[in-house]
Length: 240
Ligand SMILES: *[C@@H]1O[C@H](CO)[C@@H](O)[C@H](O)[C@H]1NC(C)=O
Ligand SMILES: *[C@@H]1O[C@H](CO)[C@@H](O)[C@H](O)[C@H]1NC(C)=O
Ligand SMILES: *[C@@H]1O[C@H](CO)[C@@H](O)[C@H](O)[C@H]1NC(C)=O
Ligand SMILES: *[C@@H]1O[C@H](CO)[C@@H](O)[C@H](O)[C@H]1NC(C)=O
Image 1 (cartoon, rainbow, N blue to C red):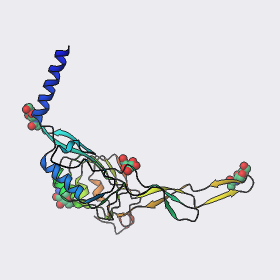
Image 2: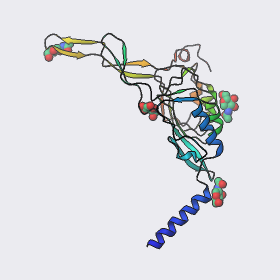
Image 3: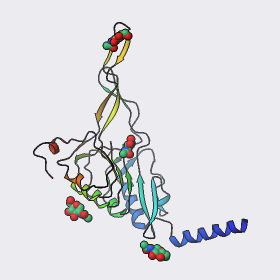
Image 4: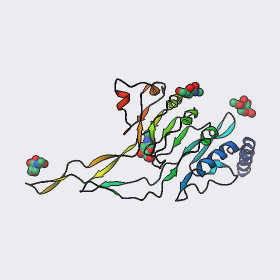
């Protein structure tokens, strides 16, 4: 039994060696260039360094595609997103600090380097009102894309219509806050009535001139555009 087990182990190790279980140098370079453009105060990308296998870096997953190991998943979702409270005077109070944000702009080298990406989550970081890069449309294998509340602004690029494998798309730029600004009291019971316990706060200024780009996303099963300005798209002037 033990001999069988160690033989199996040896076979697995040899197979792994033959398949060269590591990301490609191009992919490693692309990820390092993404990191170089970002401020990372909490060291969330500390494991992203050196010439090693980038499949072992935090937030990265790899899989075999056409017999070669490629980066297929990039998950940089903020683990401690902002929590806000609307105070009785109507002003917003931050209950968390923003030090967990990755902030900066996205290196365009990323999109030419990680061609096999299927899952991309950059949500709740801070991309300083930059536009969503047109080159995102080059990641033709994307099935999951989450850019929600990441501080993107401007028009959603038409190139998104190329992402025809997308099943889940979340571009929301507005989030729910605990709202204590309207409290009333029931004078017969003296109980506090919390009429509007939540309200929305915008976290970016995304807009879409039209919705034709959505028509080509035929695999889409989930779409969130909370807070995205669709006023032009829904008016008679809307066009693509
Ligand atoms: C993957 O490798 C196997 C065995 O070497 C080969 O038979 C197969 O055709 C390869 N597949 C692709 C898509 O290259
Ligand atoms: C996108 O990310 C946010 C958190 O950052 C999460 O709450 C939301 O559910 C995600 N959207 C989808 C469709 O998975
Ligand atoms: C992607 O979209 C652009 C503009 O919408 C188009 O010019 C280009 O040919 C498309 N590329 C692919 C691979 O479909
Ligand atoms: C105030 O409390 C009374 C007694 O429970 C209830 O009948 C009434 O509907 C309440 N009024 C409001 C505005 O909630």
